[in-house]
Image 1 (tube, rainbow over the protein chains, first blue to last red):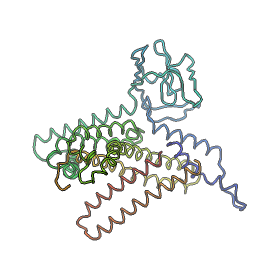
Image 2: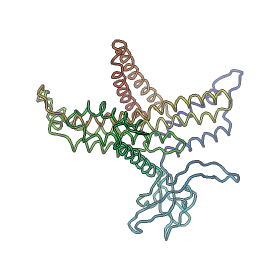
Image 3: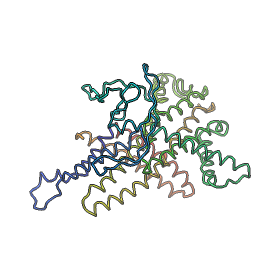
Image 4: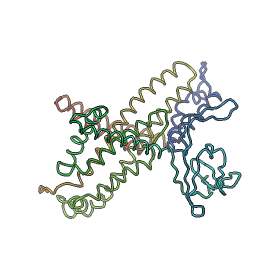
Length: 365
Length: 62
């Protein structure tokens, strides 16, 4: 899906090639040179690689002197589990970015499109008619780039907030980085948690709201760095966050919440069975929308930004490249805003759902 | 990149753009009427804009 969207973008950027067929005018339009075609291929592959997870932490790669690709980065542990072989652990440097077959113990493993398959010594992978690999695939529990980033950000957050909490022992005014974090935490408490959840119950939801806000914000910011880590643009990560919101909403709800869903007061009794299935669907659709909103915002933002940066390299003249650079810069600023905004929206909507799960029964129905 | 896909994507963007534009315009009217409430109005406007953008992206991707 992302590939199609991005290829549409690239085709729009190369409309000069189409225009040539239909005109009889004298002036010459720029023809698609093979160099431009090759650059487009490289850019498409680069963006695809950025958006996906990978088994090693690859910071940069380029073409070396003898045409061989050089990489700069470090390998990560690959942990596989299968019924016959049990737990197999090896370093992802044996996979050589999908070029060679890893020989571990008695088995051979090979990377194909980001998945690890069990193969034979030559690394043959057989495909079925829909171009899916049919080799045996062990359960992949590796520490991939995204998982490593999640660990690092969790440790960073633990360190940041525990040192801030310790600094409160000395006095009510925080020092150091706490001075930046305290207004944000107070904002989350006073403008997100209390208005939505109410003064009675907000305290038990505060830890989750604070965690999710800073987690998403820091991960979004990391996605904008040249490290090329795209954690919140991974639908599994956003699925996990939305799932936690869903579980907390429904497990800590009180009776009037379920009453509002299945037997809503204030509505004529005959309409209630009609509205109940819709409300039931709504319980699932609201966290689903949380998941898709964060995922799509991040992936779309990264794709557009990298396409414009790639456009900078495709243009042959100075004017085109510098305009693309200015556009890329403006888009990066917008992405910074979107990073914070998406974290805020996720937190605010979670607080809204928690609030509706804890509403007191009022008698105006 | 078939033609229906391209037209569909264009329609989605038109819809999202019009929705967010309408919210922005009523937010500006409200701020003009009561400048002291501009903080709350801005917050509400951003929330509504993010929700509409969420639908827009979800549709654009699927």
